[in-house]
Length: 280
Image (cartoon, rainbow, N blue to C red; front, side, top):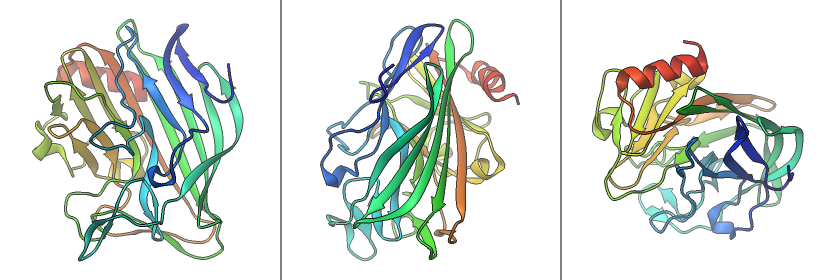
């Protein structure tokens, strides 16, 4: 297994490639990402640098505002100005793998902007089989403030753009001719699910289904950021209604488990696979 592009495997089958040191322009906020991620049958369920959002990079962790620095990529939403091109992009830099094998890895990263390290991250990724039709990607990230002073994490929503509270875990799914179905255990449709809290959220196309579950109490408190009609993507919202403070030495931890299944799942099947993946 190459330490520069590790390949995740489930039952010997490759299901995801992790790009450790991507060569990307600064405005895309360079960062490690998983792409392509596939179902067990080999169907791709991620997209990299699509025309609609060049800074969407498969599966990873991205925050649009860390004390004014953009670790998401693209334009920055500025209050009373709207989306604005700024020279404020940061980068996530791989430091080392603490563990690396076909079932997953533990990685250390530095979040750097304007020549200074703001956050240190430990990222844990694991791939687990869930029978012949599905597998689960378990991703935990912890962000520690290493500046010696207070930091806060924001989003376009906290900067004045309603409904745009993205930031944290993000999965850019593959765009297809027909938008995927969106549902939770008791709601359906992008408008009903976006911005709400739910134990799990599903995106279901004709050939694949992704089911996202927040595992820890803190993760379950975060609203879901959901897109389907314009493009398919699901992420967490670390800073939904207000900025998230991170005191000196403080750490923010979140864990999301994603079920990756072949075919279109219904509610009962999605819920059962989530229970198998996270034990509840």
